[in-house]
Image 1: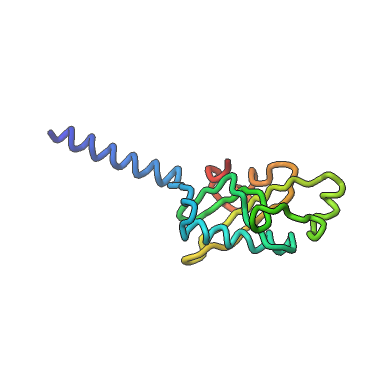
Image 2: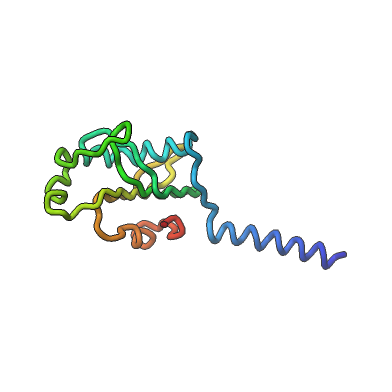
Length: 142
């Protein structure tokens, strides 16, 4: 009996350690306050760069207790295409050196979120060094 209790306790401890080491990560449900808060925070620098309102077509969204990562395609309200000629990326688009994706790394700030770094229109994967640069867990990335 004692061995069974000990074994059950060890299974519980190992499960708790693996969640802590690997991090509990989830994707907030569409329509949830949590998802809205992450996307609203991510929207601020992207809208500033694009010079127009943005709605994200979310391709990848992962959240943990302290971090959030978004990869999506910025669109105008109602799914309209972004007019990049009005943005800081107009020359890159004209030169054919622009990808419509946006990647945003956020950190929890009290009850909300703050943008740590972001990239719009990148050609290569930009987030593969964000774990080293900013201390974010790499298991957030796609």
